[in-house]
Image 1: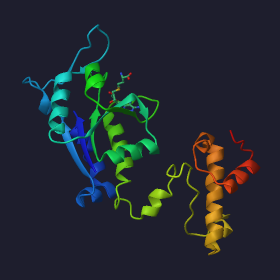
Image 2 (image 1 turned 30 degrees about the horizontal axis):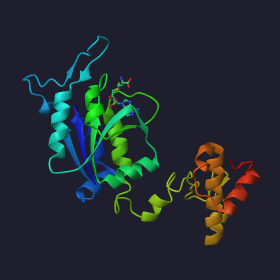
Image 3 (image 1 turned 60 degrees about the vertical axis):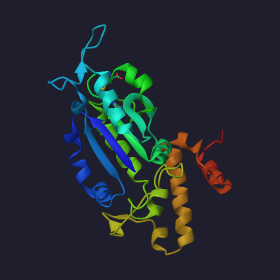
Length: 243
Ligand SMILES: C[S@@+](CC[C@H](N)C(=O)[O-])C[C@H]1O[C@@H](n2cnc3c(N)ncnc32)[C@H](O)[C@@H]1O
């Protein structure tokens, strides 16, 4: 999986890319991350990449030419999916993460200030992605979210394939709760079934917990989740109504 990140702050990514699973994935060549300084594509001696908005108003806007030059360079001989991180984009979820993973090569454009010239958005990008209904300072944190979420799907990045497949959202549900040693903590016990060694009972308990937590916290997810007749029966006992 390859990511080209266009940013005016490449240094922003230094430590996040140098720790944990992402560092290992890069070292093993599973994930390639290329940081591109937008200023390298400015053509004036001051390396200017932004300017005042036409029509007046607050803030600065990224000029179209440096972005166009950076995108064109990154597309030479390749066919990446070009994404602008934007609060106006498609709201990121696990389904979109999978879609982005399947592209294999992403160019991620990080805006700052008032964002980027509209002509780049209209004509030179393929997709706009938002990390939530709020506004942050810049696209860098959003690019990191995309990089982390997509990289987890690259085979070999997460230890066991199983753990990615059973994660929250992967099967349309929130994940069941987890416990570790000690068996009793401040008087609170680990559910007995998890200590039973009965794998079928554990699997059933986990499935039911997943269903229950999803119903209580994110009932909207149940509309799209693949549910068996037993799942539905269990949910109905909790008060869920099939639509
Ligand atoms: C301060 S924001 C600009 C917001 C823009 N003026 C608007 O109202 O839509 C600067 C940059 O941060 C990034 N950004 C801010 N919030 C974001 C979000 N929720 N998801 C993805 N990117 C975001 C975008 O790249 C954006 O160009």
